[in-house]
Length: 383
Ligand SMILES: *Cc1c(COP(=O)(O)O)cnc(C)c1O
Image 1 (cartoon, rainbow, N blue to C red):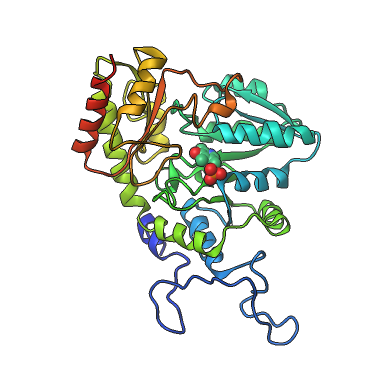
Image 2: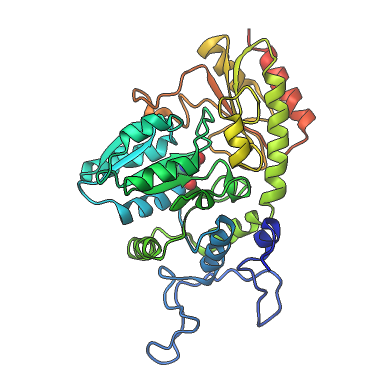
């Protein structure tokens, strides 16, 4: 019998140590493994770039939680994305991605892959007709989807996009970083690959940088596995172990992130200083119904635009006390960011540019009354 998500998050790939009975499997902080005679590998382990038991344990766990057949763990989200893209793109290939993907993803493709002969086109991913027009049969190799998107929390229809992408012969990829597998499992809607910055909700404690690719097809798994081994941007044992430790509480954390974010979104949507709240959990959000179908809850990320413009937005972002001004997201502690000059500075001047009126909140799991009081006092300082 398959267990529920939260049981698997704690037990999948996590057998106790057979030698000592240690409940938590040890961190195999070893670069190489003794051979019983030449080629006599114990458990298949030879050298830690090709495989390490701690990384294997994380990979088994992530594959299970996303409903894939294989997962590959990397040193960062972007190195995971790069490995996946290098395994499916070659000079002359074409990739279509959302016009509001994570800025670093756009930078990776436009400034690393495009100079090697890849073509990049961006499209409004929540507009299925626009995607149908942009994805050309036999010419589009990758359709790259991010939902919810960053920072405007647009929701895209994964099942419909998988169908459009497959009809054109493209590999359909979903960046599932904002939702996490607890809220949304893109492979179950037909996507071919999921990527994560495990730095965010999966790690969950702002203490480790990492990334992952999860797939359900053996041929694609073999290609990504070869790049992981052949290029070597693997996660180190300590990072893999910290990530496993984080995953165990993913469900309870994300439930609290989601309820806290909804409370803040509701409070801000009636605040005088706020022009608009971008949170898929609000019924006024254009992607609300789709998100309700596709996600278990609405997550901990929201953005707001301020009536007072860029100056007001900056003041707000610099005036919170519990919400710390920092890049990144998905940790237990609340963070606030000013995308146009922080996370999205690299896409200024492109069509991915974020308006200077936008402030992004990564709502943590502190007491919601304290978080509400903090945003209220910061908005009081916005003239
Ligand atoms: C942070 C992030 C990435 C990049 O991951 P790193 O771990 O920083 O390399 C990719 N996609 C999304 C949506 C992110 O938030």
